Amino acid sequence: MVQLKEGIHWVGVVDWDIKNFHGYITHRGTTYNSYLLVSDKIALVDTVKAPFYETWLRHIKQIVDPKKIDYIISNHAEPDHSGSLKKFYKEEAPQATIIATERGQKIITKYYGEIPITTTKEIPELSLGGKTLSFVPVPMAHWPDSMVSYIPEDKILLSNDAFGQHLASTGHFDDEVDQQKLWHEAEAYYANILMPLRSAVGRAIKALDGVPIEIIAPSHGVIWRKDLEGILNRYVRWVEGYTKPKVVIPYDSMWNSTKTMAYAIAEGVASEGVECRVYNVTANHRSDIITDILEAKAILVGSPTLNNHVYPSVAEFLAYMRGLKPMNKIGASFGSYGWAGGAKRFVEEQMKLAGIELIENDLDFAYKPTEDEWQKCYDFGVMVAKKVKE
Ligand code: FEO
Image (cartoon, rainbow, N blue to C red; front, side):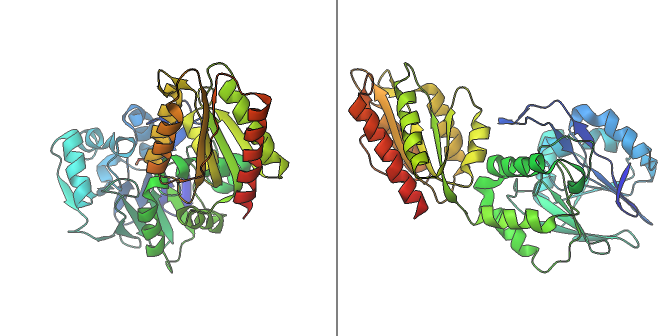
């Protein structure tokens, strides 16, 4: 097994096959990281998703006899990290003391029934003899129970969900994997999981200010040991709502009219030298579109009217985006209809509710856009491009 530093082992599992992580498409699989600290006392930090129990247990047994484990730390009760807790405790390590936050205790009990759990209120810090585990609750980074564990002697932060990536790989550290894939997956992970929780994530980052850290070991993906500054800077930038001159155009179309409009707007944006990406929301997964939206300044959503309402695929995308609360965005709606509209108004309402500042326009055309109407779309693209460059 891999060691982060002397006596600190990765005993997690790699999930090469997962393609959908609670609604977020995971093209490159993921890992469920679990760490074993071996000192005078032995502590296991986090478990793994239930179907991976056997593999995980094998990894632990390669290092220690589970009967010798003194503590099991649950940084977070979501089942991808707690799914093997009860079985492991009951069958392999009933002598161990389980430690979680008070909220974690409640959630674990609700999921798995009564198991004896000591809370971090009772033990805020744990000495293993030569190694200390300091527990820092970071509520809502990801769930109310979330916490991180810090090992001051080794300057290691076990950050649970924060700084993770859904990236299955044979490399365990950030310098052992393809860099383009790594940064893309870190960005996708933040956009699809942590973006609506930015206040809590920001507070957690502030709490780390001045804390010496040499390794950040999250619960998904690779462990950061080389470019800590890179990942921390990106998180600060995302939490602060950084945007760049970039336009994303998610749309769907019935008879190519809204598609023609989307393409015309994109041509207008491009004519100003501004980056633009058009996504058909049926052909592309919503989580890939959101990843591209994270740093974009403008979002222009196109929908045809169907039965006096928004197109269902666009409604689904809007619901997803609204939940993720993108920050510092301007946007607009456009589309086509037959004999009566309705989609544009609905899209605008949803975008407003998502906190997007709307750019008014009359790009709502009957049946098929005429040449004049095509030109209006193009000109609108030019105008938006100028706006995002301001
Ligand atoms: Fe990876 Fe919030 O669980």
